[in-house]
Image (cartoon, rainbow, N blue to C red; front, side, top):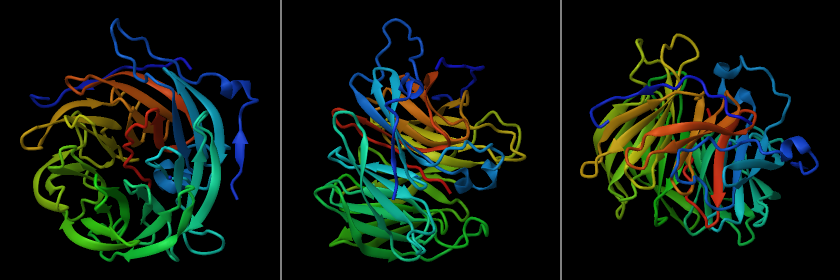
Length: 437
């Protein structure tokens, strides 16, 4: 696909700136054709992907995302997981696995397995969500279903999951059930039954979005000793301890009423924790003790809404990605369906190496449409935007010195994408802190 690039808008701010068949597509000439070609690079530009890689894109039913997406025409395709082979800059679709609302994907630390969180309210006639386990073929990246396990009773609408660094445990955030589940991961990649349940209580001032606890994200620290969680429903960030298949709360941090924390990112240095607040469209920086697993005082907070709007911010912030270098933070803003004069935008912030505070660098909105996730290439040289309404994955190159985005290129198409995992050899770091509501 030849990229169709519209008018580019750079907005500078500040001085520094989710019984399933497998559909093989090997006999389709159309899908075997490369669906993405590299944008022209200036002389001396670096290669974005230097080794053979695979990408996994989950697609969902638009009904997941509420009235804001109901205007879109039906695609006639079912939710699933699209597998792409990446050679240099060519993304070639090699498989589509039919899956029920796979809102989030998590890759095992070994690189051998992929887990899909099924954001459903009923599974096998019971009020529960589920998680699927897949084996990854190391040669061609194709997926084979291993099993599908139900979550706890009333554990509906799971939104996110995290795998422990040792690869033995999976923790799931249940947005509909207001709880967290723990499942063991067997040596062959299959999932055990739910071993631990931590039920949350609370609410927030927004009666529509915060009538109860709605865990949105879970994140292991580097040692696996602590699990950090963001609860949009009750304006709370928690530090949890996983031991013997059970979760217990170790610490709680209240965010501003009505802010609705959605995503978290720990700085590589372990000194700071960044929280993306969906409802208030802000990102906050907290002090963080990685050794003790303690969240400290809030050090900073900054708006994610683009600076070029002439009206009141009515939208939400939907995705957060902290660059592996620790120098830059990227956040996505999704405009409101009605009455919002702002645009869907990716905000770039520079991180102060001494204080952890954020300084705005850039606002990028060209070819951005209802962004649901931000994922770095394994080498950190580019950022991929999950364009939910535009049905594509947009790649943006990253300037190493400034963190600024440039050279937009649509590398893949998929109907209503929700999550992206890029699996390189050797195994690269995945950053996909996203769920849909």
